Image (tube, rainbow, N blue to C red; front, side, top):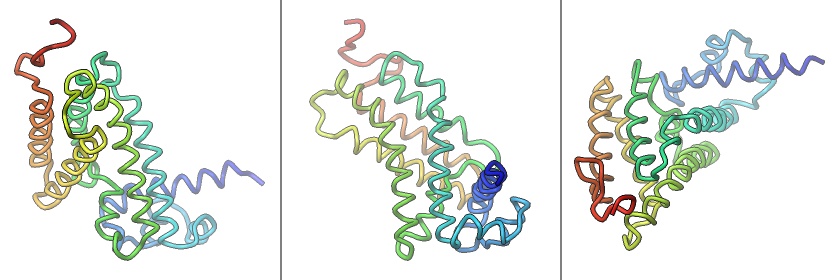
Length: 213
């Protein structure tokens, strides 16, 4: 049995999900749409997945895997200062607002808006994806907080989740207005907010700069 063919067909179906679900949403997505996009039969779909919900959970996990690798290789990780990495992450989120609205919006954000009350398995998979990404962002925030705002009452985890709340909200506005401009504005506001939290001034320094006192 050629397991590579099986793996390839499953990957094609999951890859199709990234396009179809972001274009149509979860509720409007049909198995036929996925198969047509992947160039496979419905028999091939049901060989790998029990049904639409099972497929959506797998798609959320696949999204986490794909985006996890994408963000892990982003250049802001090379910056030595943790606050610069946090701000670099925000800049990177703005920089990837490219293409049509479905091309830059979030698969799991799209699905959880529709399925949170009716499909607990999908909701939990989407939550794991968004929260897992926030946890990675929180690592740099925690280092920056320790260095520049050790007495602040907020937590790195709460700020990391706030970044995702702003970004997901920005995607909703982009859908409503059919363009990335409003999303870019929202991300700019997020960056300014984080700079204020850390007292970062217009020169790129913080008050009581620990690096060059």
